[in-house]
Image 1 (tube, rainbow, N blue to C red):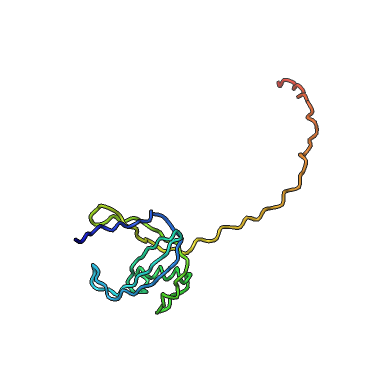
Image 2 (cartoon, rainbow, N blue to C red; image 1 turned 135 degrees about the vertical axis):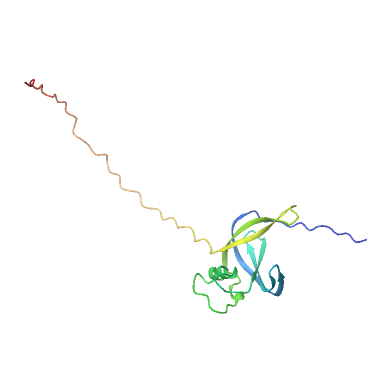
Length: 154
């Protein structure tokens, strides 16, 4: 007797996560809703040990989804005509993850919505020397004075 159970995936809660590119897989021609496309899959390893993947069309056109990702890997430098994605394996990034409902509506899966540059390091705290103590200023004692009466006007 063969028993089949439904696989339960552990989704990542929505948010921004530090990650590293861990693998690049050439998927070749893949059937999509817009016809066959030459695809590549990028796998990211989150700092908590979970892995997320996203498929991109192999195009570096400025309107393609892969263009901003490669721009993050290149630190904003101009993108050449051809790029070897494998050289970016291990590169740190931040991933914006959202939950997308499944087609049957019974669950949700984690989707990489955006790839951002890594967060800048926190500023290092440099303690400042304590200011020298200055005694509070002394003011002369208040003097009472009387306003002299004015003569009535005519």
